[in-house]
Image (cartoon, rainbow, N blue to C red; front, side, top):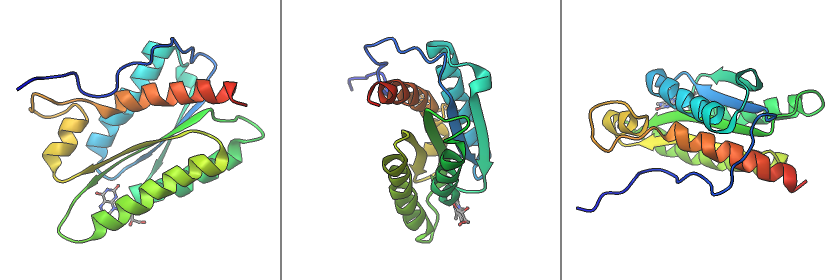
Length: 170
Ligand code: DLZ
């Protein structure tokens, strides 16, 4: 079978993230996986785009359902003082034996989209919706599967690109 490099290719343009302020809101549910995703996003923004570590704010919430509300509140609290250029919401939903997964996944994906559109601040959808633990580990670059890839890296690229473009669009 033909193989290919997973995830998003880096943007053609060299974005300068050195003055960006980035908010990462992440869950404590499935924290081992979430932690790896947060690290992937942070390392990408710092090493590839020179985002300053002190300009990355981390805020934790219990579960994914809390991500849109918290992102929205922190964006509005920051507008007059230290405005965020982009937000990454990071969580991991793993399907169980009830309908909980479907309800939360749908609410959170719509909620995160709404926060971005309503606030004008780009909000990256960093929520994995996985059918089992192995899928979640693989998508955080953990575990033993050969095709593993840390999606936090993609979200770091995405946040910087949107933040820089959004500054131009103002
Ligand atoms: C309740 C719940 C369940 C069953 N599963 C997850 C999950 O896999 N990942 C996640 O981030 N959060 C989960 N939660 C918690 C909800 O997102 C939320 O924190 C609670 O329903 C309280 O609002």
